[in-house]
Length: 516
Image (cartoon, rainbow, N blue to C red; front, side, top):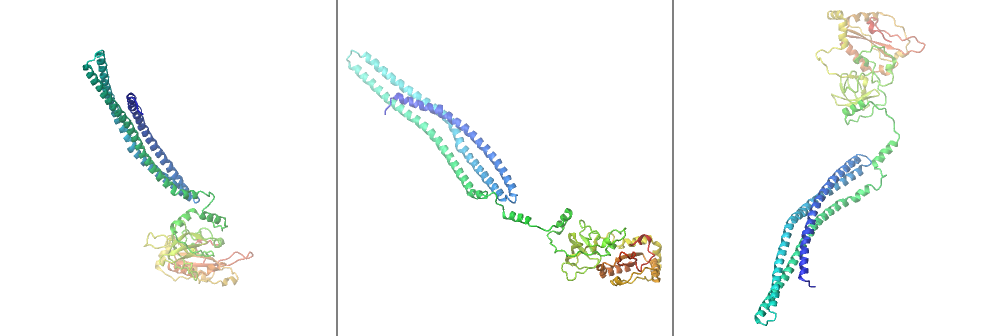
């Protein structure tokens, strides 16, 4: 369908005006909105990162729970995947800025100047051509007025020339208008094509991003859903723990938290064999090696079947090394420890169990249980050149005159014969009367450094059978010039008079002679 040149010209002008007045301002507005879009996406990714970081912390909290450990791992995986998706989105919008926003911004500024110049040039040329055409038509009209009524060939030639000029200029004008319209429409199309091309690139980037996001989210999605299908399911380990709590267990008395902590610290991974079922008996001679001299009389309560942790004189919470004061033989029991007097034992279990301690003999490396009353706390000697017992030093201070006499005269010491048998149970009790032998004991006491009296209850036959401990004590007393008197307390009934000490000297110091 052909159109008049004027209509085509109007179409051309409207096309230029559309690009200049609609497209370019719209493109500039699009650039501004694209920048706002970038800021919004950056804010969204920042908020998303904070959100999924918080979700990851919740997952860590859930992973610490014995029941929700798997769900905690799932929550942390979801958080990590979504943070990767956010990073991919940031990369996509970096390309969005470089591929689209920057190019559109440059194109808008350049296109405004270009379209203004092109449209102005078209208008100028169109006006010039239109003026030439109008002038030719005006000349033809003037020539026809002059030639009215005249039949000269001169006017005919000029009229033909004017008609040819007008026809040529009209053809040129139509060609110009057609070319101008085509150029205007192509300029408009090129701009829309540019816009579509850039957004196609953006769409490709977003499609790539969504494909990666879909792949990352769908790979583990089914596994995540399986973990939360049954909220009432409990792990097998927790079920076993709960069932174990329902099973009745024997109640074991708890020890002090301080002792338990030090026991765990010192013993480490040592698992000792079970302690002997029988309670360890307390040696009646153990009190002589305690750090404090007993001031109260000895009663039968000290020899009861209770725990002997107080009589042993060992602070379990503080001491880790002990020194034996009596020999001990394990016999056929492999869990017991054999040792001689004076050996050093390192405690492997700090807690005393029914009078038994568990330790390692330092010079042999053997381990086993031993009675706590057979040892005392080991302390490093401060003055190794002066090895004197406190009782000996006290005796030397209290009896300086006797020391001088001992240096001048050394007389043989008379000792009472030891008797460890249980035959006295069947003998009648005789009252103690002074005898010549007792008088000799009293005389010999004037030349010794210290006199000790020991009362052993006869009814505890296990104590009397400890021959090794008594022999060791007897040997130590002989070497240190300590007079050792051994008394035996016989069993008594409610009708018998109070027990008497048999064959004991009576010249002992008054403040140490009070015995039950």
